[in-house]
Image (tube, rainbow, N blue to C red; front, side):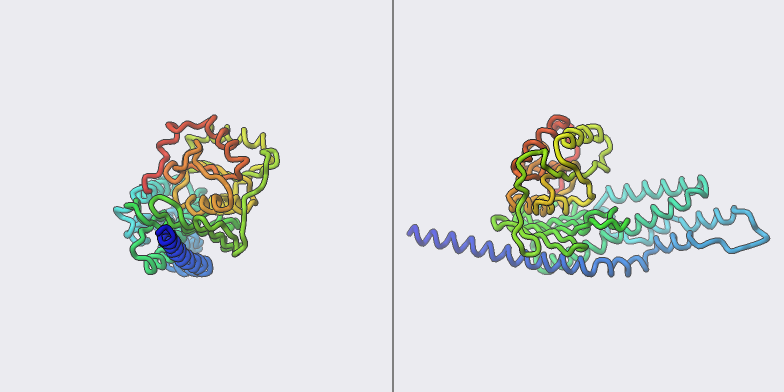
Length: 370
């Protein structure tokens, strides 16, 4: 009887492992697809982007005219070219209505800023063109990246919900894909070579699968709960570092939460004075993958979203590392802050964070989507 029960348990575990493996294979295929095709899709999309049409028109030099040397007409044409209401009507935001209020609020705020700035002085022209090009590129990148990944995942697993930056605001529970279509957006726009794509699977609030792809280095980091972590098929592990003085750490600045800059810099100072060095590369999904691979010895950051952390957290844990929020709790996906490190360093980083932050202070940064 006991042997029969044992065989049944083993069969269930094997079945679960097979299902996870199938999901992993699908996720790997999708990440490779997005990495290969993303830039091509973006270029095609940008060619038909009405926002960039406005930018191009504004960049065109005014026609030479000996009769009208004044810049008044140029300024009038410039205002017409940057009719952002026209952009809002044309550009692909209609599907966002009623889904992402924060995005729409940000868009309207940006539009008001541009309209006010345009009326001030011609010297703002280059700055405005740069900001508009960045905004258009960013919007396109997210739209394309999510469309590729979500489309493939929902086709293969229609019963599993999806949580991503520009998609569902919340999930109901059970199984859920957590997707970051391209982490390191500013790096991507500026051609700084540190960007990554990330997919994780959460079942009953437990991360069971994580994949992070670095398309520029063609590195594919994989982890399945209980199965270890690999990079391009080779087993990886966190650093064996035993002392903070030997450690190279990674972090990210709270660029969306400037009100926390003093506390953050205090933590930075404490850790910086006790370690070998600190790096800030701008793509949390890769920072966490690099902790898992032993390239970084630890990482901490404030105000992250689930899609920034989920896959990387599993990679670190399956590579032998320790992951928590700033206060040692396992609720980092909800809390929105994370410490991931080699076991010998984790408590040291947490101690620095708790000296300068309190749970009450950062409660407002919590994620309510998961």
